[in-house]
Every structure is written in structure tokens, then in C-alpha cells.
Length: 256
Figure 1 (cartoon, rainbow, N blue to C red):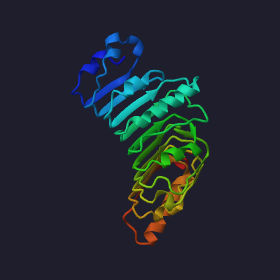
Figure 2 (figure 1 turned 45 degrees about the horizontal axis):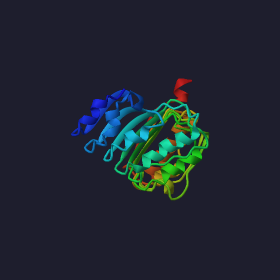
Figure 3 (figure 1 turned 45 degrees about the vertical axis):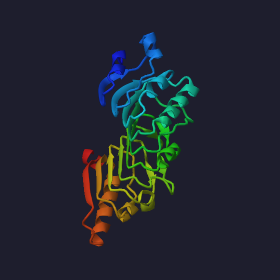
Figure 4 (figure 1 turned 180 degrees about the horizontal axis):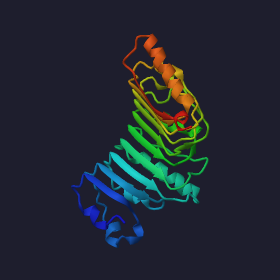
């Protein structure tokens, strides 16, 4: 449990824990009477979070810029689960967020993030792909990592006007099969990493037209996905474009 004494370290800037959790039930009356904040704290990880009184905790971190957390809720109370995500909105200084779940989030599920967010890592939420638009509309997002079934479903249809500043995208251990996208959907992308997406049939071939692209790396995906990346490389070489680095490591063909 996160000790109450932490709140007396007013000069603390970075806090790293091993899945500690916050529980008001174990705090003294003095804590509730004291309205002090950890105004200098910039980063905290990894915190185990439950809904309920977590608002009192987060509101004492007005200048937090980097947050790593695991959501432990069973999501039986849908209203409180949604409120938990709306609480993230008032963390106006938050730039980097890593979040994982110990169980599937409810569907439909409403969630939102601070507009200043630049880096987001999600794991095991198992949300439907259409809800990724909430992330795609973040105006300053540059790095996105979707890991371990962060989203569930066989088809991701990207939409125009989203991910306008995204530079780095990682897809790892997702059950996606069809990725419907073009170079216009990721016009600022510099690096694409796809790992252990065994059912993904191909990387959109038009990604080779992204002018900012520097790297495509594919690891342990299907043979057809690996082949699609090699076709992108051939097209780039035909255009005398040697700036994009292509890395293919393993495939289901290699394992056969």
C-alpha cells in the first residue's frame, strides 16, 4: 500500500513503486484534513488503481507528467468505472500514460484523456476498435503502443483526421486481421513496429508513401504480413528510396 508518509515528501519529483495501491481506508483522519499536494511530483509508476476515492489521490498530483497504472476493477459498477477515466481529464500536465487492465473493460465504455498527452501505452483493455477514435483525436499524441489485446476485433478501419501527429506506432499481440488504412491516415509516422500479430494479413502497402517514414519492423507475424512489408521495400527501391529501413524477424512460415 502507498504509505501515508509519502504525502510529506513535498520535494519529491519521481516515484517508482512495485504495483503499490492507494486505499483511503488505511489512512488517518489527519490525511483527510490536510489538503497538501505533491506539486513537484512529475512521474509515478506503477500504481495499482481502483475506482471509488481515487479522485482524492489524483487531485493531489496537479503537475504530474508521467503516470503508470494498473486498473484492478472488476467493472461491476459501470458508472464508477467511467468516472475513473473522466478523472484523467483534469491531469492537465499529463504527457505520458501507461495503463493496463486486469480484466476486460465494459462495452460500451466511455473514456477520455488529457489533451496534452503525447505518449500512450495500453494493455489488455480489450476494447472494440471503433473506440480507438477517442485516442486518434488527441491533438498532441506522438507515441502509441497497443499491447496484449489492448483492442479486440479482427478489423481496424482508420478514419481521416485522426492521429495527425503520431510518429511512433507499436502493435503487439493483437488479434487484428484486416488493417484498413492509407498513408494519409498516418502522415507523420516515422516508426512502425508490429510484433506477434499472428493473424494480421498485411501491412497497408501505401505506407511506403509516408514521406516521414524511417522504419518498419515486423516480428513473428504471419508470412503474408512479412511478404507485404517486403513488397513495400521493393516499391521503395524502385523509386530509389533508400531512407526507409525494413526489418523482418521470423514468421509463421519459419515456424512451420
